Length: 470
Ligand code: SF4
Image (cartoon, rainbow, N blue to C red; front, top):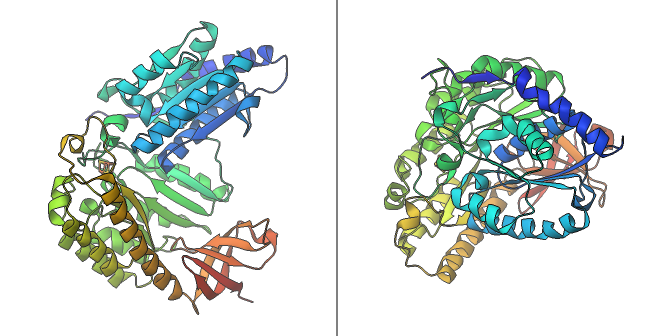
């Protein structure tokens, strides 16, 4: 496959400068304001940070109040039906803002907008939306906005040919966090899990060059970021497409060698590509958090096959046992789907027994949501929603007990905690352990953004309390 690495060109940057001038004239020298709302996963958060970076270069400041904004953007998520319904509801509510403030530009982007039927519905039923662009068009955002404003017309830009879906390097980025940063290492997914829309809306796998990842990582460490999460739909298959000559374990080892005071995390991992080599690198790393988010989705082999997950229960548990063996302090988290089409109660109970066997710190649990265009959406799904809801409650109750037990085990230990903020109500500092567990403790606000050793004194469900070590 041809090299897809591509930097943001001078021609692509050109509209940024032009838009800066246009907005200055429009606002008569006042600062234009942008409201950007992000739905969904961390990849969407990382994409929004790039769009905000471009907006900042256009002269925009940011507001939390859409009524005050000159530019409103929703970066949307297609993973669940409920989230899509919420987006349509929230977009509908923008009609009023447009009525009172006709010059506001309303834009929609993200995974949801890559779907033909969604773009069509927005086009036909939401005439006040000025700009719509998909996940592959982020680098073209300045040109699209420029066209929208200067031609005074609606602009819709989605998809593009797979071979033209380049990796966009050097896009300006305005990071939301002061201590925590997202770093995308690969885009897209080739797995086609039968329930998932991601490969259709984010395209095939594309890994960034290791040198580009390393350069961005070093910059983040130099800028003082303390908690850096490597992102990708399936980070464990990093380096396969195009062939980077470096797999994810090797990339992680290279990053871990960068000197500094920081912690590395990564997500999301797919069990079929999770190797002992990766777990060994985690165990031996200086900066790698002993936290593994490894979605298992179901504990039943028939359902895993129907989901097209390419591993079975035994293979998943083997990985977990090895990971715990090399990292006894490992914190495990996962995603799980309840009520996949055709799942029986007995098959669902295999999921409960798996969570009991593993002992996850926390779980992201979802009731199956059909996504148009996926294989699972066409499967017979006889179990009523109320029944699935009961299973969901049963799973959550089991996990609550497991999480409480896991947290209780931390009492008496000393944890290295990244202090994130001071709670304005309680005055307590809040931080996270390497295992991503929240810890509350007394201390001075000046400690925010530093690592502190904290003696854990109590556990309340999934939150720990502690005392700063002298
Ligand atoms: S691995 Fe499966 S669930 Fe994850 S993004 Fe790819 S297709 Fe979707």
